[in-house]
Image (tube, rainbow, N blue to C red):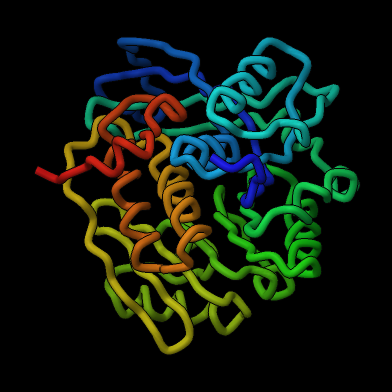
Length: 306
């Protein structure tokens, strides 16, 4: 593995507190859990680790607290070959996510941002070296929106390819979207971004065209067990998913993005990158946890859908 990171992830680092239950609770209902685990997570860190496990060098810009969760999150990144020199300490505690997972692998997630929301545009400017030396800049929305906007603008000024995972979904202005080369939402996030309820393929086409008209260069919409679609101006292509038995869908979207970027930075081929992304996600959902579920390059290369 070369020592020069070609990818920088700007985003969140959370400790995931995962509670397993037989079924997700209804409003006001108390249930007994079957297990509780603490697993390194955060959308930004998950995507970075997914890339590192696929043997593409990457670095990360973000913030953690000075507590033991922050120490463990940094250690997890380093173990997976992610450069952490651009991650700063904050006065706030490290971010956490409380995740409830049922026996079918479906989940509910509540994030307490903590140090993640202390990441400012000034911090990005101070750590801009990481962006300058990378080819691709990846962002999500678990850090302040103003920081996301500033990073996108700076990355485009520096001639970088920008990828935005709009999760958790927020309304984004045209001034934000025009700085995004590839937007990667899931179907629920796409609906929230556009206000269009997705009931069939024509709704999907209408929603993606809306964002293309707003300035996004291309979209990849993940559709769970239905696969994904790639859209750019005058082009829409569907990709079926690999069929597996899901155990835990935590980090499925993050693993897809990591898998996509790790291939795309190498070959610049959308079809190859999406194929790898879908393999990575298929393996991930058959395992428990966030970073603990992410596969190695060898596992992805040996993957076959039975």
